[in-house]
Length: 524
Image (cartoon, rainbow, N blue to C red; front, side, top):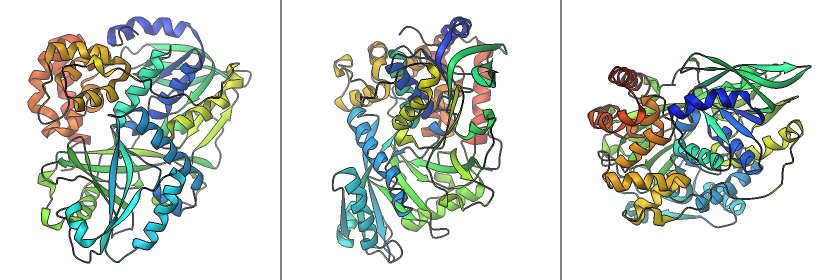
């Protein structure tokens, strides 16, 4: 595939703008990446443009869960649940090391839902997945399963299984598959307007945020997958619109509250599902669900009220742990692109999570949807785009991820090889070169290798320091103060690979730390 970095981008951008495309995808989250991947598989000439960075929006700030949506069964959304559990199983099979099984435990304390009701929901859930996947544990057994769980009113608990991922790395892996089959992708390209001729969309105007230059792109069809930003490029405004809902999370060191399972329960304040779960060696507390009134063009951030809400939830289940603000490493907040109808608003948690397609000649906009079903959403979008593009869409059920040889990383443990294969896929040979040079040393207390930082700086189209530390790796979340203590060594390794002079690095570091304090730490 060749180099994929800022210098490649500078040279390639004018040439990419001169070409005519079968399909241009607008939006570099998981849905946009999935559309590009499926279009490239079909042999379409396709390009993706992302306004900030790949996975910058919701797709790096989700709850990290690949799940079937158990709570959607209670809302009667059986089709969504069936599709989700089957896609979950597909991703577990195709991307081990990136999408991993995670067991969940629902403690029962005498309220709703009790063991019988919850067991009934799980029976339906398992039937849709085609396998039994849950078991009830009485209190004596639950003590061994989840040490430290508060026992006031505790009757027992039900264990079931879903999956967890690094959502930003999932996006990068899907983009890697797309590029491996001829697709192209650019970040830092803000689409400003759609071009129209005789009532049909024929292309778009975009601004390169790095240089300030404007470019015109022509395409037979566009697929707009911009999530919470979907309303911005629409012309036909109807009753349906995007309702941005914020979900926020807290992260604390794994040693402070070690868990082998995710704990799922209803918050006493509003009856919403809340989770405390292990992720990347740390422990996550999430999530909230409320209207996001702030602007969409800045990184969403947690509010003081949300911090209190999530700490209260944690204290309910683990009162002896005494988790407080001083224990927290970081936070993140993402904006869910939920499709709402009309002006009469439901409570945020009562809004359905179904997706819709808005179609006009030459342009298909995907609104809503969920991470787990990104492949199915991509195929649905391409079916709607095919006639505009004048291309055939071959129906098939091929894998999202091509298998990769573990032999490319011989010097590592089986666990490390699996992790790197899952996260890097087709790029594992290039990564292996850096492992050979730098070894298997990890950054701080994380599982991230210094070799991964080097490869990201060299070959994963990093434009800014936050791209490297918040999305290509998760060091900014997993290490204290956004990995401030590691920045001198990161600079020594990555500055030459990024091609930045000293003033540029100083500026990037200052901007990154200011962003971390504003949107990824805790409110003052």
